[in-house]
Amino acid sequence: MSEAELITVNGKTLDEVILELQDHYSLVGRENELKMCLAGKLAEKHLLLEGDVGVGKTTIAHSIANYFSQNLERVDGDDRYSAARLVGHFDPPMVVQKGYNWESFVSGPLVSAMRNGSILFLNELNRMPEGTQNVLLVAMDEGMIMVPKLGRIDAKDGFLIIAAMNPQEFVATTPLSEALKDRFAWIRLEYQTEEEEREIVKIRSKIDDDQVVNVTVAVTRRSRDWNDLRRGSSIRGAIDFASIIQYLDKTVPESWVEAGIMALATKVEVEDGVDRRVEEVLTEIINQVLSEQDFF
Image (cartoon, rainbow, N blue to C red; front, side, top):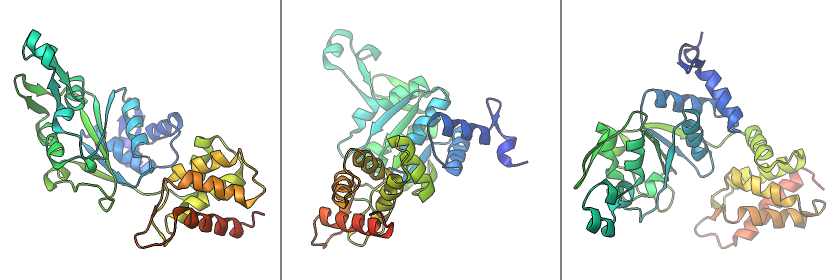
């Protein structure tokens, strides 16, 4: 008997829960990552999901929240997201009328999640300023925060933080402090296998043409290892590529090039020092894949 079979959630083993999550939320693969997320949730540990854009961090967070019938408070991090936005603020006109109390306080997502026992999903946590990140420390450590003029706020049962971040080498990210990292349980999400990515494209694009799916996935995967690109495309590129090409003439290479550029140009970055436009790089990748697959 496996360890997963020894643990039950609402009378179901972890393996059964994972199958249910995959079925209900159209999740392909990710068995181990889902198992680790479920184990962390049951252990009441705050989770940090790290991975490239488009690997499914947000989807996993939503599926976990939905499975446990919890509301999810989502925050999309950027360098202007202040601590006041995260915690909340007093509405000046209401303060004049009511004074400093809950009626005049506009709760931020952290306070709302704590008071309601919800999951706080911090998307792109490492794009938030360090001062905003540090607001989380006491809430994670002690399950409470102090709000001036209101006092102590204790988190209800079920409160959990799931944070998602891109790898630290990405531009415009702020390294997490050691103190903050120390309070998370960490899960790494890599790009999925080619077979799994093909299945994802079929589900998301609702296209069952193997030839289209194979080419679009191959182009997307090739972009990740292309020397002239600093960053390749996520699976979203293949989904968009497959969706667009359906409305063009698939019998001519130009249609594939045009659709591929439309789908991928905003999802890749040309390497510093490369004196070529993104359209030229993508055209080369697409034509190479088409020739290898003897498409025409």
